Image 1 (cartoon, rainbow, N blue to C red):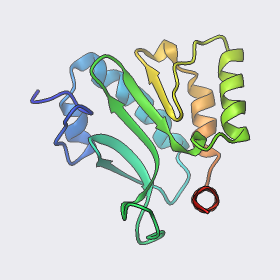
Image 2: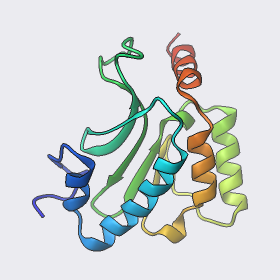
Image 3: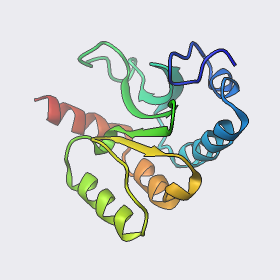
Image 4: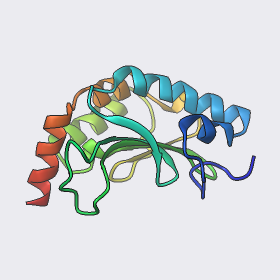
Length: 152
């Protein structure tokens, strides 16, 4: 293992990214990855970018991003002492974000989340059904509309 993925990872494929991880972290990310893949609306593209596994709107579909990079929708990373799921669709302080936070807490789990970064150390920390529902809830066109509205 050259580096811990997410912390300076040079992986260019999801398989390489996962291969950099110790077995326990790899199993954790593979379990979350399965939920993400099962829930991801069509049109988002899976890749490795910024040292994380990412899903984004390809530039061919939407080239008008502020940084000239694909519009990121979701990212999954192994950090030094935890794992992260970046739910960019919840970043805007929207009703969706408030509902997500309320439903998470009502489910009895501690929520360790910044503006869009959900931190976790085990599968027991996660409400996988709510995550799957949240991921599936925003088709590409709706995400682009939300992005354009927040940038206006």
